[in-house]
Length: 283
Image (cartoon, rainbow, N blue to C red; front, side, top):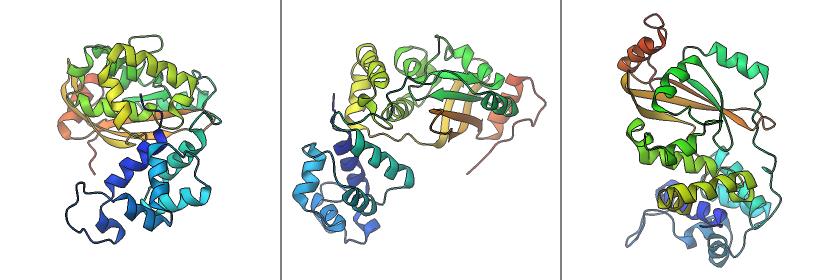
């Protein structure tokens, strides 16, 4: 399993940036649509040999100035820049910012917030995907498919270890990608608690998990649409938003809303609320 998360992230981002995005001619005879190492080196003001060393893991601690230059050259978003900074601090046995045990307690104000989100399906998770608290709307959505089994239930274990997951998520491959990206956000295997779960999934899921670890960088999508097959409500399309709580909480709140009118009606029936309690969102 790769331990060169910094190199993987830089390579995948370089390959995702087109020459046109950074004002370079597309040229010809490109084997991939992304930037060449030499082009990234020129844009960042470093040598191509240094870019190669970073991507191959032979240098894992670039200076803050180089990190900033690479981030600018790769057109990284704010969250991607934070992720890159964390990777430079946590490669090769450096100080682990995620060494504390994953939080299992929920602040009263966060529980009150969940109450206010009813009847929307919303769930609070920690950094290893443990489900800590949820709305009644989420309970009615998730319990019938087995997602709330376990003490505590865990998203990654369900997706990779429960045979019901593939039926629950018609786009299982994409959901599995997102779970791996979520685990790799931050220090990944430098964090002993994330590493222990990764070892477990390596055994239980095999190549379905390890192959994704090898090729996917961190940073799961904070928003999107998930297709969900519910045994009572049928086929659902759920738009989700991920809200990061303060760093001391080390938790995130995932809120689901109907992505179309059919899903809104199905969720109204599932939660027993009046019609129109959940309105479809778009965009």
